[in-house]
Image 1 (tube, rainbow, N blue to C red):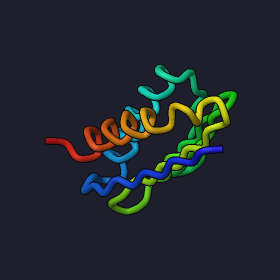
Image 2: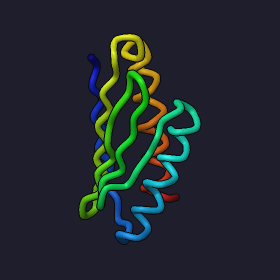
Image 3: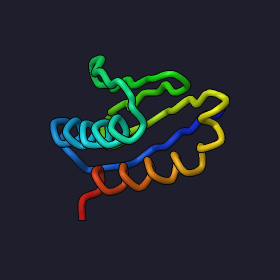
Image 4: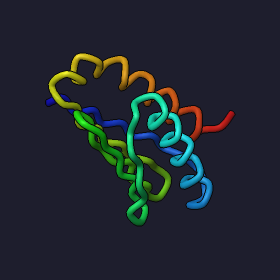
Length: 93
């Protein structure tokens, strides 16, 4: 099993951070067929072979993704895409 961990610092209000997290969730759920659900300040997502969470904290968002054997082969590409998306939505230009 592969694990991806991404931390993105930000200066957003809690409401803005939640909206940014929702944008990331919509993108990854559409691309990878994930079911997403909020549990307090934690956005949990899963599908067969993939599970993870995006946790909102003060001034940072931390994502953990666990990939099953088959999806593990795509870990570098998944990590690059998710890192870029998080950077774009949590650190607006």
